[in-house]
Length: 207
Image 1 (cartoon, rainbow, N blue to C red):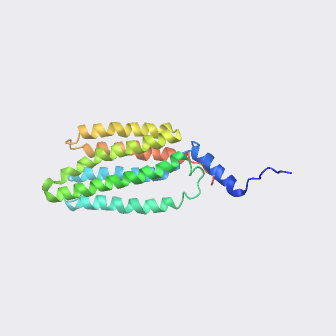
Image 2: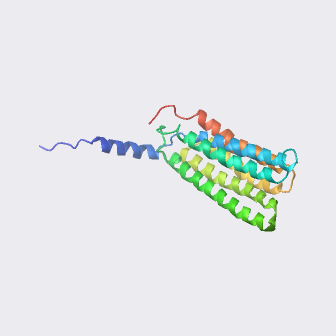
């Protein structure tokens, strides 16, 4: 007599992961957004103060600001990554996309920074670094809108729309002396604050 095949644990695990990948699970990268949003907003504020002559000597201070940003950012990234292992929903489409698009974003911004650095050293002046800011906001917009759409998260999509607006605003005010105050506020509003809101809504259980 034929017996119906009984699914083994591997089959069940595969089906669970397959179902989870299509589910609109809450995004679990809020801690990373909040951390990097805080750092970049702080760095932009420090950049504003340096340009105004409030801090630094007008030269090496910029290296200190952005060097500290990079070191603190990566230290925080590794620390936060150790706290997220096994979070429920990590295999959802939105969360898998989030990891990929933010890595691509970081690489793209880093690549532009390298190119601008070479340009500045060849006589273009420090002002060319300003053009990284609207590019960064354009990259944020793509990351936020894509991951928000996949996860069905309106907060993230709205933050992405805000980043789109910031591209135009910063570009329009790129010669204004207080442009980095605008950039700091924009980073806090479109990256740090949404990150904190996502963190508050994260699943508390492990997968």
